[in-house]
Figure (tube, rainbow, N blue to C red):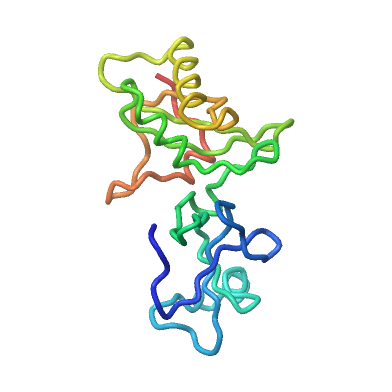
Length: 187
């Protein structure tokens, strides 16, 4: 993501509101000393409840999760509502998606969390295959192994759904929310 712009007091904080250490994941906030900087979202129209979720404790909560390296550069992990908490681990869906997209069988994919009684949530990947590949148990295992070897072991998708296409907005953005709530028809 780069470094914070001058004139903005930007930080990454943990769930307790404390600044994160180097390479620790947390939510990006903009601290407000006296004035709200120009261009910052001020709130939801006629909805104080929603506004208070993003504006509190002298901070604007962006909803973006990131970490900061030793040089001060921010590294995007995902949206706070997209981060998957599985068995105590925080898993950013974009790292898993990148690993899957490195496999020749994957044309496009999206990673979301799926409810799990033991772990809270597990990683679920919805995958559109490249022409010439067919979704089967062998390919599922191959994709899981590929992610295990490309990222941390615990980040692999325990559920893989093969789909003909992903739901998208008119501008082509994948509708993650609809994939969290519905299971697509398997190929």
